[in-house]
Image 1: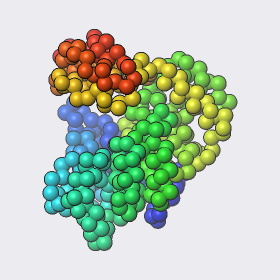
Image 2: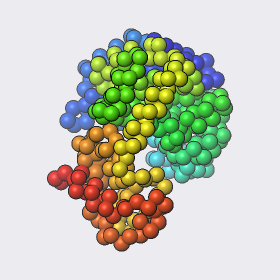
Image 3: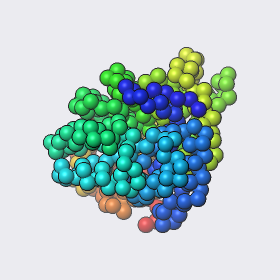
Image 4: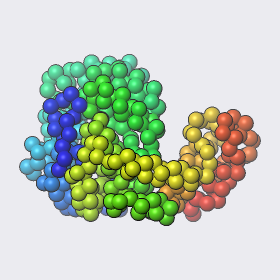
Length: 378
């Protein structure tokens, strides 16, 4: 296993971390104990020492499962990271309440890494007003938290403001070769690292889309490379190539995925990709982008829709299905949107969205196409 320094801390973390969000479950949403335990134990035995969980993962069952696993003799072999559910914080007392609850669920008196989960501009402003930085200072001083951090989903300016708002030890951002300028992106990665933060990366395979059904023209490009690699390996290596990346998280839920990912990162060193290989990845990205059917930038100028249609999400679903050939997955997502009364069927063709769209997208036609294409029997 390859290991990397973790920002300004003294932690030495495995390049591949285990995200405990997608563990195998039964039809009731309960974690399948035996196969999940076997997989995580195997990963630790093979050198993975970074486990990432959160208060709400797997319907709240991830933290208790992690405790049962670690208490069987693995606690001292890993760095344990979990996250405060920021969306449920209403008063300053909630900080302490959640931390104590999570430490009890994890059956530990010490968290190596504690993050504020899923920060955006609105949540950060609320937490600042409630004194979250004082709470973090106290928890670090009394020894309950080792390193402080946050996971992030918003724009680059907000990311920089949060990075500069506290003496963080780390952050967790979404990054893959398709999302180089999405949310924090590569600029955010470099900004945080320059400030001394360790940077953990989630979604290196973009939710599995970069390793699932690979379009023929993309596969043809991969096969031009001098070194034969799977689509998943190319995606992982692109992220690992950044020296600013400390750990890459993967929500692995099969033993095959674990073994494959461990094999990939063993020699996926920083700056190990050649200029030709990086250029090939750029070509692949261009092919994916060429498969977009609507030029939506998610600027939200079309929102709010007076009828409640979630226009940017539906336009993005059209692109997702075309780019990644994951029609069934997108159809499930759209059907859920429809059942929550945000579907394209509510559109009355008033034209307000088209008048506001800076990309001049024929939004009404696109919404009709999405509804016709994706709606499953409800």
